[in-house]
Length: 309
Image (cartoon, rainbow, N blue to C red):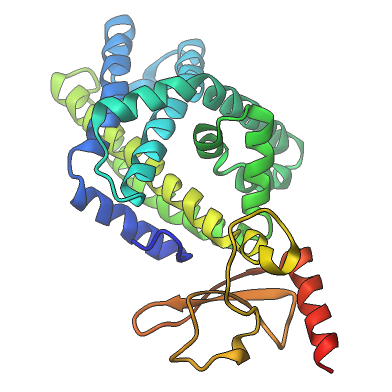
């Protein structure tokens, strides 16, 4: 997994599977550390497991959904995104340090998740389409809150910035993740529909829930870092724009290099300056992901073209 190279939706899914293979215990254990105590409490109070919550009363079902929304999901997201950051930086994620980091940022992650969830719910109630848009806009709000740790309002803003004009990419990614995580839950529910209270149904539901929540959190953590990589053009040309972000020394114009000598990075499309493309995807290097050209970069590009005329 290249930390700086933008990834397609199917590549993100492949990277998720690759991380499971590389660290076969850490991610399931992180999810299980949250899910097992929660499911045990639910079983003790209601007598139902994860696959049979639909048999509960509406009030109890709503309360459990609220707890999962406000606590279980945000904590698993925070734990997974910190573990992914450790892996991307060349380290080996360890349970205790990752757990400390996740618990430390849980309040702001939970707040950002609750506020974004309320907004999305209101959007679906209004005209449905606003709910879809807000779901895409705030897809990585928990991850932004966990990594930046600046508060829930900056997390909402940061998620909106990262997802801007990338809704198609995120929508395809969400379909992949939804199919992978929801199909096992659906099949498990069907399998124990006639006998929902056995020990086997509880254990199967527990395993399925751990897998679904862990896979979704891990994949979305990778999406978050992918969106950050795609936003790097806005920070990557400070030598040209005068910003304070990390410098990128290569020219913005891909025509200044041959294919063999062109450095990896983002370049303005000469035929459509409103878009940038990433050079360096694959082996041998080729053109990969595209993104909107930031205003400052486009202005600097246009000025350089005017000077060359």
